[in-house]
Image (cartoon, rainbow, N blue to C red):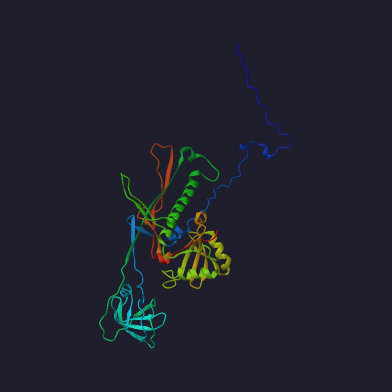
Length: 398
């Protein structure tokens, strides 16, 4: 007869007293899960949204897109040799002499004397001193401002003066964000909605964040094709493009006056500047900058809705030099909490290579795969015109 020894069955758990919810096995308790997944920082890309969504986009026909810029005519010359009151010869550098033509009026900004140029020459020019009365000694380093011209009646046309346009360019960059699901995952019922819906939304936010980082901090670069591998292009962002107005406030005691002094220069140039246009620019800032500005400018701040469709809003600061729309840029809080970008949106463009703007591509899986694969795809870059119309703030104590 076989030796049969059944395993000893363990005793069930004993509950003494009234039964409570904690006495049940966890699998029996219905989970109180909110029926949607909260996306972390769903509005994390204000710069991309404003430049591409609200302002509009530029369609490019080549991965290298270009543009031409033309600056103002320079109007300042500098005296290189001292002269006495009433002198009819004034000497400036050869470079400054190219700016000046016969019949130009020059104002010495130190003495207020006005000079009429009769014969310009490389370095040395003949002038009529004391226009309008009064003449004074000129010193080395005096600034001569070109006021404009004064011709006699029936004069010849005079000397043509113009400036050379300069070319600028950037690249579009290929951004790809792949993701996928197994066959079982696609049919599994989950709290918070099906995985495909919620994950697709989350991946879209992350794709936009990739682009936002590039448009702020990317550098223009090209890796040439080699060994059967096609070229790779990277787009240059604001931090790469802005070179003139970079303000480091490390150790600076920030006040309303100090901020207005920054805006005196920051709001000067561009179609959004007070010299040419509306006197309105956008400050994309980390939270710390918002706190700092609010601490001394709260009575100067007003809430503004920028675009109802995109849910964009800003706080408007009115300075003596124009308006600044304060827009919180959440990604700056992560690794650049001391930074802010003052942007003239008239001179930035989100650029995409035609037929390759952001899209969700399906069917990326192999034919025999038990599942589905997708990817968000963008081939885009940033055009930053007149970099002197923008500015960067950094070094804020955090």
